[in-house]
Image (cartoon, rainbow, N blue to C red; front, side, top):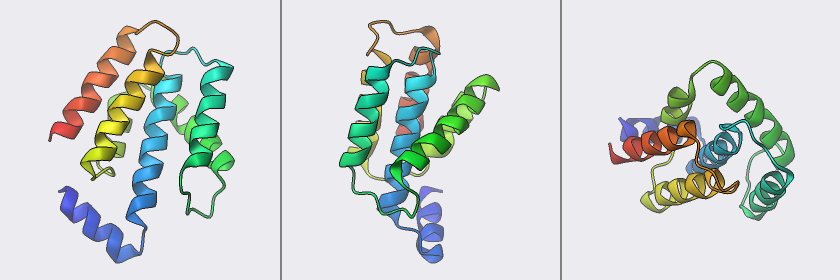
Length: 132
């Protein structure tokens, strides 16, 4: 299934590396927002980290961050967190990026010193998605 997705992206001319970066950013933003506690430090770190990535999209990083934030809030409010995670993990094909996604999700979730049940469940689901 993942290989078929990859071929479809290549057929459409989509940059696979950019697609993976966007999925990684999506997951980081989700884990920032999932517990309902968003602090300025998390956002500043995320913006700085995002600026350090090689970004080849026509959309600016600030615009992308805003757009994905809206999508994450919608997923959280409508109990679609697992679906959101599943869709994004299907776009991360490289094992090192999968490990980085897990590390970032854990780091962001523990940034406030508390791992909420929803964060814990989402991290476990993320790990399961990458094990497939």
